Amino acid sequence: MDYQREKLKKIFNQTQVLTVVGGNWGDEGKGKVIDLVMSEFDVIVRFSGGANAGHTVFTPDGKKLVSHLIPCGLAARKICVLGRGEFFNLELFLKELEDSRAVLQEDLAPVYVDFGSPLWTPYHALFESYIEGRRQGKIGTTSKGIGPLEGLYRLRLSPVVGMLFEPKILRRNLGILYDVLKPCLETMNEAVPTPDEIVSSLVARAEEIKSKVIDTGYFLQEQLQAGKKLMMEGAQATGLDAYWGTYPFVSSGNSAAGGAAVGTGLPPSVFDTAILVAKTLPTRVGNGPQPSEMWERLAAMEFPKAHPELFVKGKERDEFLSSMLAKINQGKADNVEMSQYFQVLGDERGATTGRGRSVGFLDIPWLQYAVRINRPKWLALTRFDMLSGIKTVPVVMQYKFQGEILPPGKLPPAWQLAEVETIKENWEGFEENIGGISEESKLPKIARDFISRLEKLVGVPILLVGTGPGRGDMVIRQV
Ligand code: GDP
Ligand code: IMO
Ligand code: MG
Image 1: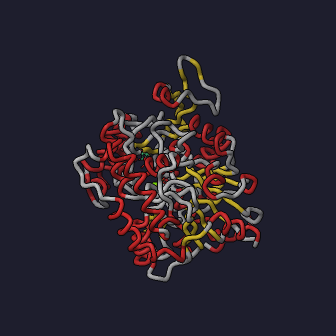
Image 2: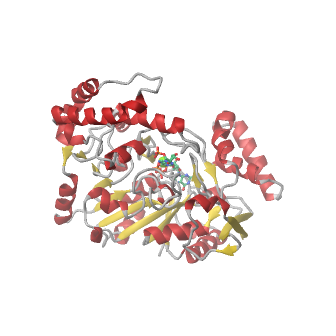
Image 3: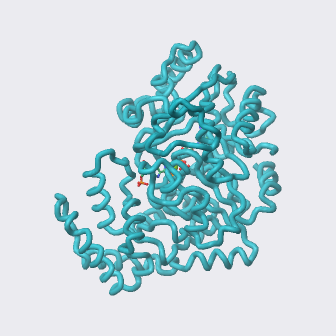
């Protein structure tokens, strides 16, 4: 690990602000990349999303910590900042602090929250369930109130965190929000709390965060001036960005790299270095197009619930995986079976909702698009170990849309993305199990060639290659 540290020190020597963002539809392993790299940074900052995120990290002694609202930085005792672009839920925040304390068994590092962040109230949750209950073509949200938090804020109806300490202003704001939403909420068969009830329950716990609420943009500017290094922890991903994702099947924040400036109040010129985290086999939960996926979304999402026995370590899982791998290598497995194999192998279940993640083939045109949107300096390719033992790997090389091959970086409008035909090519796979390898030289030659080929097609150096869920399971490449 010390040897890895030395490498990281050299790589990030000149980087004062690093942005880490997701390249697919979330759950790329951003948490793991941040965990590896954050030793080189002083302050870890979230700039978008909210409790819909689920970032998994492991402590040095192997304890699992899933962070939703608070940056992963707690695991390494780094200062953590929830920037203004992140939606805030008081109750979940306090619970996460408590859970983190229980997992880490230590006093936590400082955590700061912005006074201007949109503040969750029960109205946001009720309004989300009202919308999802009525719309055709549901988004399949995480039910954390994310759409209403962003939407009602932009409509200038949402309270913000600082109002927790100004009960009169909070009450006035909630009154307006209530009046606007009342006609919708009254049609629901659910108890709707009054503004007074909400104010008193929020204010009752506000003191617990009072010392943490600051102007985070100002604080971050001070940190930069003091020569501190900042890491921006992206949540969600390019495909879920409200503008550059597959609208309307997106989340509601600015999750691509551009969102870091919007969500922190730091000027765009400070953000010059980004890492795009991409999954070797991209996944998606919820609804919306994912051109390379192997199986029908709903079935894939239900699969872990229908076969829980396969998601528990043991004989049944082992037998399933080995028989399925044999079938894949004999060329007898169809796409549904491949999807099932990878879902079980990678335990592809959402960290926030527990829903199954639907798996897709490695998708070069999508990555070329994500690279165009985020202009990363490097790529982190996670879950490369998932390809261990697969002799022939189908890879999506191009998209064909309405009879034409699309040039790299170009996509049709999101509502037509489902129409693209994926043009695949078989790449030579590697038979060795690369799980846990952390040195480039130990990767089989075929695996190294695979990475180099991908790197050329995507046009960005691949700095990190994930070889397993464990803390050290990552190759830091010479780029
Ligand atoms: P995030 O939302 O982008 O931070 O990702 P999640 O934490 O929701 O999901 C990523 C999952 O993949 C976690 O369970 C990680 O432990 C796991 N993971 C990350 N990188 C790798 C890798 O390289 N190989 C394998 N097998 N698992 C990985
Ligand atoms: P991390 O940060 C995967 C998806 C939801 C749904 C859509 C909109 O862990 O990568 P929302 O509740 O945000 O309004 O739901 O976005 N989604 C995610 N999928 N990982 C995430 O976060 C996600 N955050 C939102 O499943 O399809
Ligand atoms: Mg996640």
